[in-house]
Length: 375
Image 1 (cartoon, rainbow, N blue to C red):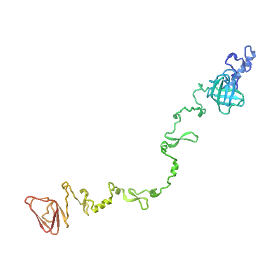
Image 2: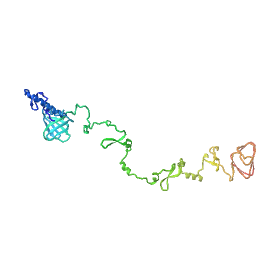
Image 3: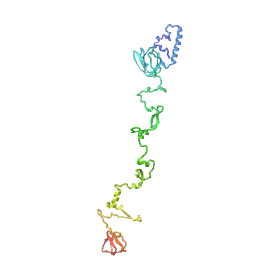
Image 4: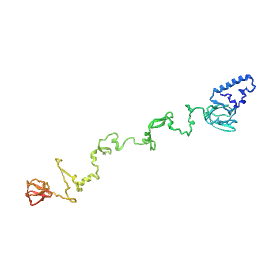
């Protein structure tokens, strides 16, 4: 609201009128009453809209002149310190009342004030009043309190580098999204799940759509079915995956094989395998497999090969000793130290394996008509 306070001078002697009422020395006594009433009016007019001050040039009346739609001057005075950047300003011209923020000021004869208007712009008509916000943008008397809704994006300096920790704490380890209100919020996607996107080179859904929708080929027999446990897996006659009759235990017997199994078996049959370790060759009774016999070569001299030739007849093997006098059994003696007779039975063939040492004057007399082969 316009007031006449703008016309008051900072030079006391210059204040000789008050709202056109003469208050100079020698004024009429009646003017004192009128002057007091005028002063009260001016004070009330200002108080009714006290957030704005018609500062002018700082003392008495002033002249404001249009420069452009976004600039005006305060003539004849350097008031750049008062009309400083970021201070709010209200200007009344012949067309409208405008509100804006001072962007910059400069002085050369006049103080030029550049303004960013909230809306509209100055016209080339006369400027009747210029008001500045009562609160300075610098060295303000207000405490450092931000009023809700008064800060906009433009108020934040681009170099402010506001730490994200100043933001409200969010749920930890979640992907951030813009929600329906355009605000940053957390999603249900965890940071671990976001990590799965690492190294993805193109649209995921497109890649999934390009994949085969169903299982085809040899794997169709196991797309929903479970296989018999602990069996060797094969491709069947239909070229499908299937289980065989071979168990995993039986398959384990192949472990350690270094060449074709059948070739090795055929080699045994054909006589190509000529050496078998004595502890790997065992004979067992065909009705009682607890009865077994093994050849043992440990008693043969080193680097020596002994050859045993079987007779062309049924016979019974003896173990390095003499045939007993009974004529049908062996006794396990490797040494004959006294004379002994052995009578052979015609219906039997005997084979003696091993060395017999006949010592002293002892005589071994083999009698009878049976066949005796000594190896």
